[in-house]
Length: 191
Image 1 (cartoon, one colour):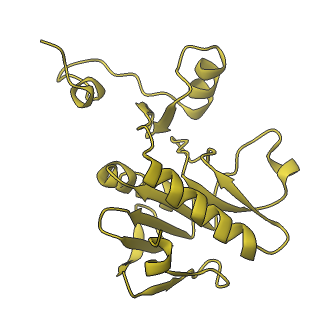
Image 2 (spheres, rainbow, N blue to C red):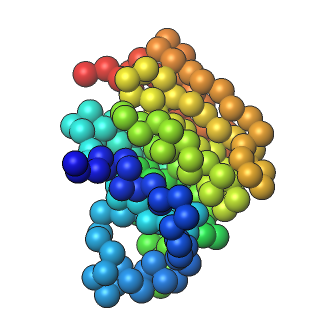
């Protein structure tokens, strides 16, 4: 009998697991020993999920909205790494302070805002919150696509966020990290 994809991600009880550092993960990736479609979370390599058209649509719409309001000195990065202590997640959308040239040699180590679009990956994307909080990411939005809601996490602390809220259809969310960004949830999910 074949193992399911989920079962193959979970180490077997008693198995020796060797967590990777960010440097080792990058070196193995550059050597072609780790597939490109992965993320490092808490020292372990995870295969990224494929993206549905709805997921891609929402990520592109949010990136476009952000690009339109950002002041000079901030960048919108899509599906690019943010280097945390023992993780290198690739959020769907991130706003970082700096210029393109600032990231020639290194990925950003924090962000003003990270957005993860969750169509079927709610728990996996929530599992990234401690890494983002430890890296000082000021605000994280989990866009819960099936529910047509945005879960907002603010005020990072050592292991998570002190403030959480959920907004839905008919609501408007204003970013605390980027006050010029206000999203009407109904408009976000409109065709």
